[in-house]
Image 1 (spheres, helix red, strand yellow):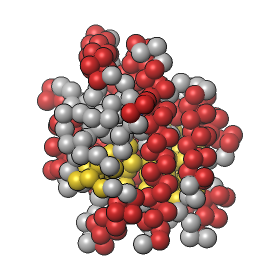
Image 2: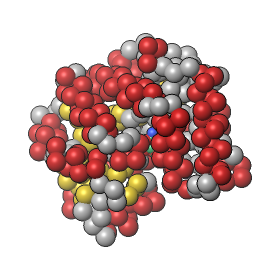
Image 3: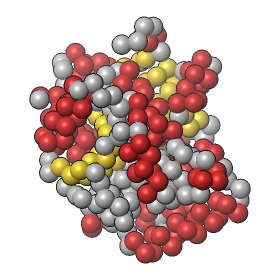
Length: 307
Ligand code: PSU
Ligand code: MN
């Protein structure tokens, strides 16, 4: 562990106990709670995800920044606060020093959740979707810091792929450049969040979490630092129709352009707009795919712990 890190890091009693007992732990992000879903579904979903992980024999550690403390594991009250607060910053790697030094509150993105998980020596992290290369990035240069973090930080991220609000092809190219394996869980297709397929393929496919755990262990034992994207498709019964979704995403992108939305506001704006345009159906799909990721992530953490 880094020198002096203890003074910033605050493990919940449950996570502390899990560490002492050598139990499997699963990290969870909090931007999905504060900026990715509306209240109260955000808090309900976060609670249910934690329950699913416990049920599978692992311990959930939702990560966020409260009064400048890097929290690993949140209490009920802290979760509720994050779900309701309007002034919680969306914190990626760039924002960490300011938010921590000035003792502010922040919700962690995939990038900053990976950073804090690694500090706490947690290897498995469950989320909905990762950030990526935005469409039009050749002009805007909008490439999520999530990708650079995946290049450098040794944590496996279980997700349902990436939304086609992004340029999926370019996202996969950047991951390849940085040596990040994209592994399909029981699929050859790279899933597009709301849909179980896209026009792209994953690099490798595994049949179960044991096989996955072995690949992770091998990567890190070889000294190959950096993350792994585990792409777990949304279950078919919850998936949305591809054509319709592409249409809606195009419209949401037009709206963002027309309103001049840029920078860190882009992703939350698109998520909220898509939810409105689908009359809430996209939110239902979003919730279900996170549950599905939690099931796989918890099993993976348990298997990783015993091999
Ligand atoms: N994609 C989603 N839902 C989300 C996010 C991405 O489908 O909630 C959040 C995650 O926290 C991710 C962040 O790390 O948005 C990426 O933001 P940006 O594109 O600004 O890097
Ligand atoms: Mn961005």
